[in-house]
Image (cartoon, rainbow, N blue to C red; front, side, top):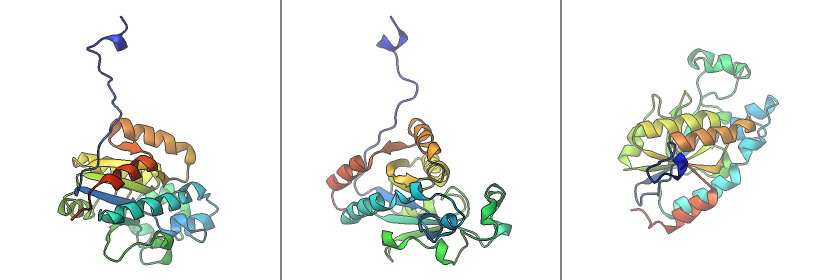
Length: 220
């Protein structure tokens, strides 16, 4: 009998599946900033193809509407530094950022307007790939009583991967929504999600996410 046919056999890498916990779910939207998503943002102006990142806009708007209808907390992150001196090694890897882009307190640093961020949402200022690194994101999530964390944004293989992995390190349960994530290197999108879903995060479709969100009771 083949090993896979044995009743004692257990697959070594189970695909992660978590259910949203009523009144203990939060939505974290990673870096949906003008410099990444806007045609006049720094990335596009440097000749970088932003179309795969822009794919997140409409799905994110749809998910946001469902989340807000259930009073699920919305947390936005913004990535940026004052300049090369406090950016760390990232600017060595992304030399096109040395002269501008992802600078705090600029138009490019702001959340893309079409996503309609609300004044009473939470905002996390980050300077490294993970939104947990040297920020108050964990404090906010703990204060909100979050257990399951819908995780979306850009870039799939960078900040989304790093943040979702760090969430699992903190015994939170991250859930990446595929259509709501994008990257500058589309060929790395699926491999990044494949690593996540057998390692630290559920990966689900927008349809599945919407279906479960809409079944939740309205959070207090």
